[in-house]
Length: 247
Figure 1 (cartoon, one colour):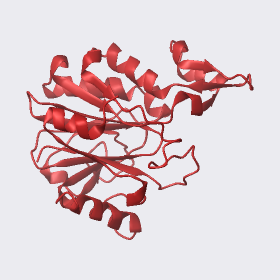
Figure 2 (tube, one colour):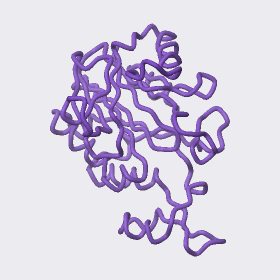
Figure 3 (cartoon, one colour):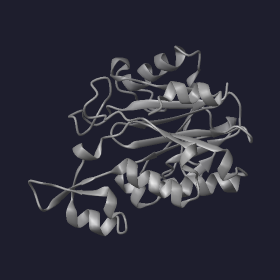
Figure 4 (tube, one colour):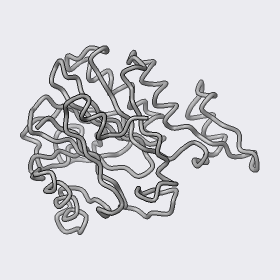
């Protein structure tokens, strides 16, 4: 449906997404990797210093943190320290701070509450959905002072359900009540196809977000040659960067 660039222009925020041509992106504190240099070049193309960027320490949790300029140029954990506590969602009201997250086939959520001047992002794979990260994100935004009517959210490209095989027994255990998003596998009774985006949208709607406030990309990461995809054969570290900010 809606592209990231169009979403950003419509809501008057900065948005950007790296592609395969930009190379695999690294974490901004991995100073010895080539990925950090590619990320810096990508950001410099938009006149953004990496010291104005915050990245969540993604560990497929339901943890969401509010951040400020003090966290600029760092990876943020749940307790605000360099620990093993992961965080998969960030919120800020600071202008000039840019929130970045990484993904291949997993879901990226980002958006804005223009009334409050708040931007946010989040990262969720199947485990993040099992932990109900979309629900936690909406709850955190409400606690931050946003109202449901003012939250506008975009869901990035992900692997389509037709390409996402999952063990039937695991799906039944992890996602009870989500049967409409578990599709039968015609050639293997022990497997199903799992609709990550459908589960994500259901959780957002259950949390109270209006469907009219949710936009999403229809691209399949596995079949779009401009994107990286784990299911498509790209190895560990071959991530795309997604950036949102209020300049």
